[in-house]
Image 1: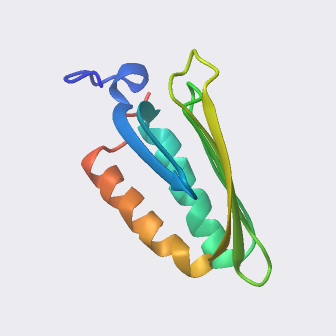
Image 2 (image 1 turned 180 degrees about the vertical axis):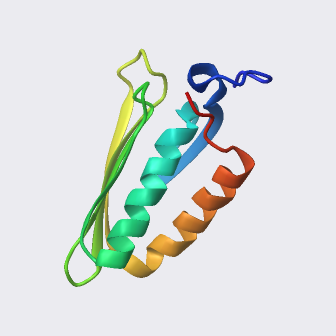
Length: 124
């Protein structure tokens, strides 16, 4: 979002278009997410995949996206989320997904790893 900046606070922002399709609802927003938010979510997903239990959370600093993935002991996942169309507005879509399991995690982890290689976290 801030080309050429190399500091932790400005250099880690990414223009992050988000597309959500849940049932008959479709939401497309142009969010701003931070690289370390995506990295922390990836780390959480890898942990729950390995341990077959726990929670992974993506919570954006400006409240664009809140995503909670719970992994249950038999490998099923519950996903709950909220997406906002603008950080200062109250227009939100809340959703819950069922019917997923831990085998759905690696594709998301791979996508996050690719993003992290392209946009590494700039240190403080």
